[in-house]
Length: 317
Ligand code: A3P
Image (cartoon, rainbow, N blue to C red; front, side):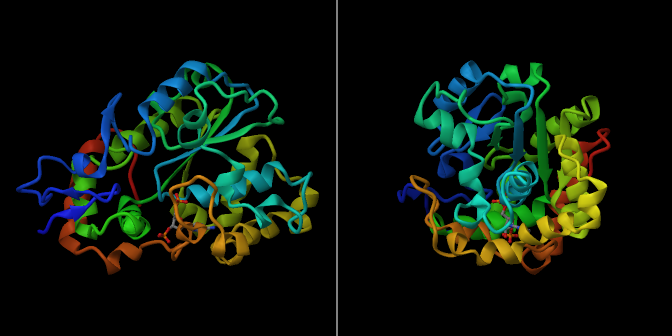
């Protein structure tokens, strides 16, 4: 394997399984509090500030995911559900802003720019997001009654999605990404520990942590959107259900609709390293991995996941 270009554009060593000391090195990941953090873009200092200073309010809503699990979609749904009495679908800010601009990340946005930002003026319920694992959330979140919505996705589709997404900064193959996941050395990995943290809390505190799956949201968007709204404390009324409000929200937040909005076709989030919003919308399908990963590769990671998740009741579709 030839040496690869890293996200900083420098040359990195051969990372084939036999030769590589670590993918983490080449990717710029730092092992921090038990997980691999992409510290070039998410300085550990911003995580420490978040953990130290963030004061959760009971009404807060926090969207959590690993990258490429459906974060953008879930943010659009949460924003629309919560704000549906303030905005119609024709004047919602989602028509002119990418969902990531409306629900900022603690670590990538808020605490990166300022170690102790003033979040007190944000209207209630405040909407935040993060890719951090449960164990790394600020204690105030764990002590409060706020709501956390976690979305996960089968790791094989995540691998393919990540590979396409990061083509703007590296030229790694889908096999490279698979290798990273098998080692647990991917951004915010290991994936099994990330999912297990939220899975366990969703079992322990079901009114505070909702565990969602990309595949289920895709398969029955209406039922899952109703489940989400109920969990958030913004359940749809009978009247809304009868008049088709749920379907309208599902259609508005669908892949086809969001990807065709001008802001998502040609826009870019200010100060973000992501060069274009259109990168957040690729194909939006379940099971695309069969076109990119060999059955042997799938079996390899499946076996690792089976072992890591053994005894937990958590499985991936
Ligand atoms: P694919 O690359 O498989 O198409 P994230 O938002 O966590 O970065 O995840 C991005 C993935 O979600 C991409 O998957 C993207 O196409 C898909 N996606 C984005 N918006 C979506 C939507 N409204 N409905 C379904 N999938 C969506």
